[in-house]
Length: 424
Ligand code: ACO
Image (tube, rainbow, N blue to C red; front, side, top):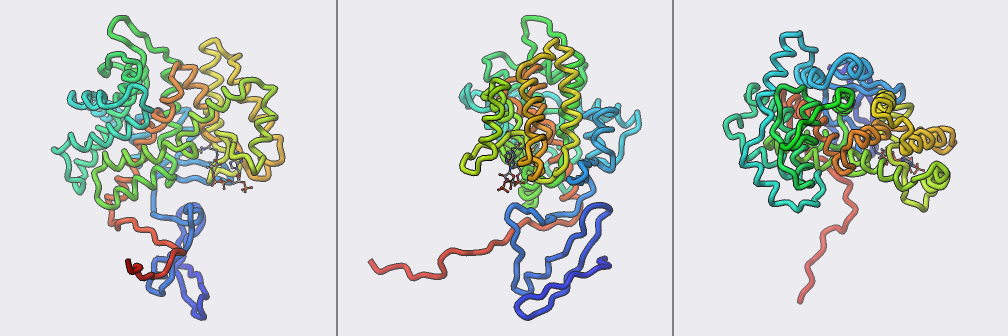
């Protein structure tokens, strides 16, 4: 129940609107009744609009806080691992040791994809962007699992979660293998989640492949840092698609499509391309000037965030991981890492970036780690999609577990009013 009220005066009328307080974050004004008054709110880009109630993730962008089910991301990245975070996001609590083991084993039982799905890949060009292939093959999963299609049944939803968590790395690695013309590698269930992914990416049937544990740990951390981020563009897309009662695999495919853009998940790919284009520390000022020039569409990729206006807590952990990985691989002197650090330093000292509260986001350093691990740039956003799948699923699950309505935004219409079709 609302204990506060907001008063709106419009067209000579006073309207009282309920105001709700969450457990954290700004109060929200309930504008649902406005439609009865013949009014809509106007908020392109959803800058001030809460589209749902949620208990999964909380962000305080001004303080650089990110909590999953109340746990700070820094602690999860340090003390937990990706599968445990998946459990936390779905069920709301950290698992006991027995629950964690059962969860890991169940996920492992779902790592293979239907053999028939392999044929889908042949329909794509070898040089197709892997995100384009992922949109197709993840959506296609909805054609395979007719046995558990009753999404009002909690058990069926749970099985969909296991399938998604388990099969995303398999499908992602298949995209890479297809682009290389190499045979697909079946998952190895004796390996942990991140090691199995690296194995499916880089092993071949002709020789032994040993997973580097430092790289596996770094991959797991990248997955953990990308697991969820409340109502961003892709998650909102998944919720909106799911609100029509659509199949969850199809909803996840819609999230992949939304993530692909350079303003969202595509930024990690764009960061690395930008660092390569800069190519030399001496050219950094030229790119900083371009980013500040209103007549130049260039932006510093990996900088800025709709919500974080102080720092992105994930970027701090990512920078530390980047350091660890590069020194383990003996490339602490990596020129792109040096350019990235210098660029960050110069940008943070520049009043333009300070005034607009533009700081490095999670993707500023992730690309350098992925590149050091031998992962091609075009796969970066796929890895983000893999990791974010659990966030998308958890939000879809939260929505369909309670009462929900189909999402249907309204508009401020500024087109022609009614016109007569001309006589011919
Ligand atoms: N470089 C230079 N200027 C920037 C940048 C940037 N990276 N980001 C924002 N600005 C400027 C804008 O030009 C604008 O200036 P103005 O007020 O003078 O017009 C101001 O800062 C506000 O920018 P908006 O685009 O209005 O901010 P919004 O919240 O809509 O966008 C976004 C956030 C998309 C992340 C933006 O900062 C951006 O494009 N960053 C680069 C892409 C990127 O790194 N995306 C990853 C986001 S994190 C993620 O999805 C995991």
